[in-house]
Length: 142
Image 1 (tube, rainbow, N blue to C red):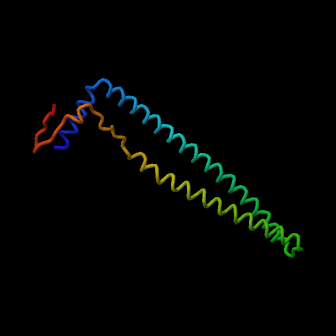
Image 2: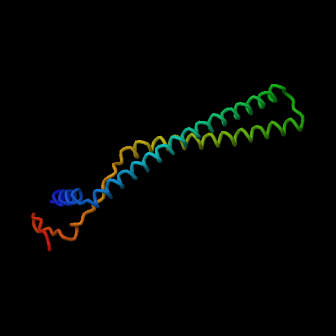
Image 3: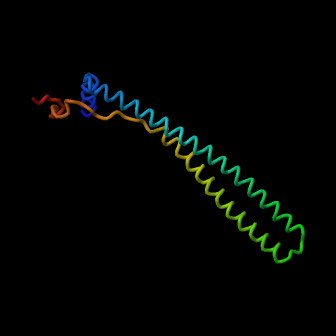
């Protein structure tokens, strides 16, 4: 029964000149929005990968400086402070890298969800107020 009503509404909508123009425009705008959102996600993923690369290089640089201090053996007070500062900076960078990785995983997990969502046309019809349903029959009300 509901399928019949929906079919009738859709037929009425498609035959209505104003409704079909509005629906076409709506569909075009929805497609453009989806395209923009897709591009935005691509740009964000690309930027996140670039940030990851930069963070990994910075962490590697900190690790090599820390290794130099540790290979040196006995450190004076200034070198110990510098080594500790490098370690805390490396830890901060590692935390930031972890956040970027989590964001990437979450954004890639959301992709199938967005792709599976179908954009349905709204029920726009001039006959909405003129249809009555009575026990398996559709009656036009005047």
